Picture 1 (cartoon, rainbow, N blue to C red):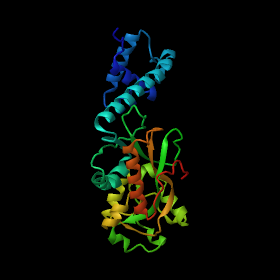
Picture 2: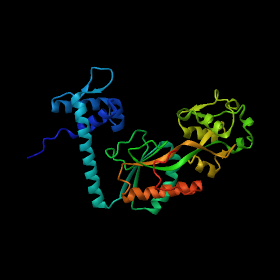
Picture 3: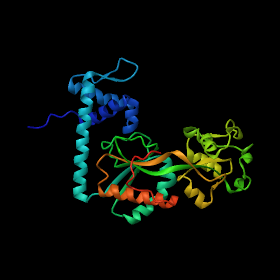
Length: 311
């Protein structure tokens, strides 16, 4: 007897909308329009004969039927993903493909520069990078590993601490020659990043420098750290650099660290995976490689098995 299946595309749309409780966020995640999400869910509701969302309120709310249906749909999608992955591994060998979601700043300023080394060492593993900034739902998103900045609060995941961030002011070589003490920061443009607006104050506290020595009211502001670092390299002012993101710029001489040494931050970069999946050869191979690369860069080997350590 043939299966009586609902529209599979509509199931995926419903799962994303139910998880986010937002047609807009579901659309952004799935690279479609909000109207396409709304239409797809209406198709599913018509097929089921029951409403899944209450659209009468200002916010999107699941109906009783929707709340009951959502976890079952998620379990079914997880089974489909796991079965498909198993077939691919059996056909092509485990680790033929590795999909990694990476924070954009870490991906652009560290991983992209070091990935050729991994590929040279492991040419049989084809890596795909995804730099979209969104929460990862293992395994239904098709992502094997995620690299995120945080404080280790992922108790439901396999989390490996890769590198604790370090803060240090950086600037162009010409400007660095004029910076000898914290007093030399007076009158200088202190470049700030809106997403980490506390960096200058955090560094000052760690370095034992009073915030009154810093003029944080007039400095240019940027919406991402990459732009601030590029502006600093061009001589616009000083930015707070975060190791390991700035290590390539320091090695190339584009940026110079001043008023060191670097101060350990409260955040770190973490490698995340669904529980039980790190035993797959491709995932464990990548973890061993990236821990070794970051450990060697910092001058200390980071234990690849040290998971969920406090930052």
